[in-house]
Amino acid sequence: MRRWRFRDWILSPWFLLASAGLATPPLLFNTFVPRWMPIMAIIGLTIVGLLRCLATGRLLGNTPADWPLILILLTLPAGLWASADRNTTLSYTYAYIANLAVFWAIAGLATVAWLHRVMPLLVIGGIALGVMLLLGLREVGAKLPFINRDIYELLPHGFRTFWNPSGFDPNLTGGVVALFWPLALALGLRGRTWLDRILALVGIAILGPQLLLTQSRGGLIGAMCTTVAVTVLSDRRWLWVWGSGGMAVIVLILKGTPIPLDTILGSRGALNMSLQGRVELWSRAVYVVQDFPFTGVGLGMFEPVVRILYPPFIIRPDAHFVHAHNIYLHTAAEMGLPGLIGHLSLYFVLVTLLLRGALRSGTHPNRVLAIGLFGTLVAFLTHGLFEVITCATRAAIIVWGLFGLMAAVGMAPSGDKEVHTEAEFGKAS
Image (tube, rainbow, N blue to C red):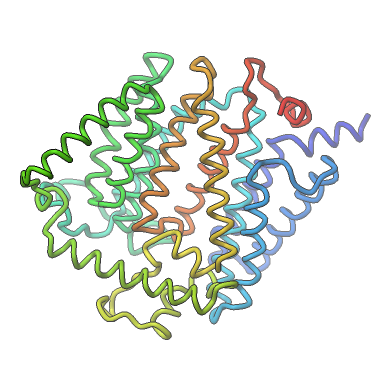
């Protein structure tokens, strides 16, 4: 009897969540704690993983994303071996292990019956996070001409964190805020109660201006793409709306009607310079992948390697680009092609799980959350064409937490009866 009680305790999603919660701080803030703390955190997570393997009788199989995540995990030692600065890469590696632990811990909540109730909390959390990031925002350039710069003087600013005394990057802030926009939108379109609808309207009214104030064009493009995805998944009649709008734009372009893109997106000169800089970094990332296809150059090493081996010409020598400004090229450059394959496989699994959840019966409690999280994934992947918000380790933990929630929603039981234990969940699926 005691053995079975111990097994149930090990398989409890709360035990896994608590283990990840204890291990994450020393891994995430490894540069601020003694060296032995992240090592002990990894040992603790390894013991927890082994205990769960013994309890379930299998090495993998807890989530459909396990194989991609194992592949990503295996690339980390290779990156450490290839890195020219192993202390830097080790710091990023610790944070990456925390990301994976958080993913598996939150994905384990698939067996929790009240999973759908976290959506209002996510909207509130997104608003609060956006406020914090805006208070600590670095100086924002004049990217969007229709935004009066005097507004920034009226806003409180100067907030700084101990891990980022220089302030938050506007593009990173825009990418993070864009992740929560579709959640508020889905809750507004498909909320079950009037309280949900009111909260969604508040979220839309706050998150929208927050995103505009960051002037992140990648974040805005991601929000626009995710708006289309969320509205169509919520109600197929939106296909007519977006289809008609797209046809109208095409007709205007064919007729030669001038579209004031300069007023919306900024001057063409500024756009060309921004695009040229990104294209140069993309080309450098391709060079890195060609020379280091299997191991990459190691986490956190893109800029140092590019500066030495493939020096850019357009980007100023004093400018810090940090990453490749594209999550796909950046992943391949720092983690090699195996790391890129692992990430692409993870994205494919999440898309499949979320679409399955979004296309469930309208009465299923997790459907609205699945729609909103699908929009979040679209925002991340679209914004990732221009930026790499996961290059910031503290922002990455938010993204991976949302990834874990996506997996949990996609794996949740499809019937009306909710399952509360992993053993029962395994039978149901």
